[in-house]
Length: 98
Image (cartoon, rainbow, N blue to C red; front, side, top):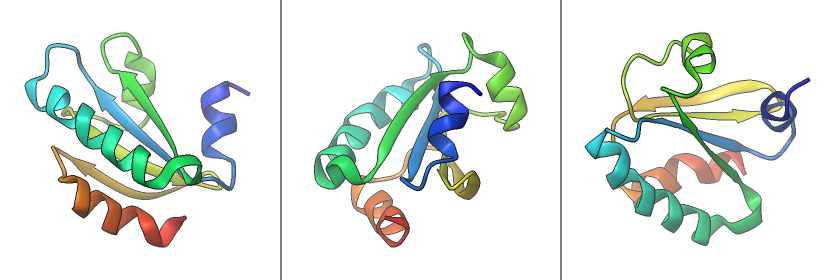
């Protein structure tokens, strides 16, 4: 089992950010995710996956645009959204799953 599969199958929520280095909105999301991580601390794991370097993972989760965020817990995808989400909105979405 890969480290990624281990993480998403755990009981700690994992927010996966599929991004690309050339993507402007992806760069905007970086500080937002940092703010969310600062607020939630160890209650959540945030992983960034470069779609160009990890095309198989992007294909597996049918990521067609970046940024795309997926939230996993206990191996289940609980939420998915493409595009930039403001920190307060992201916190509102994540907190019920902690």
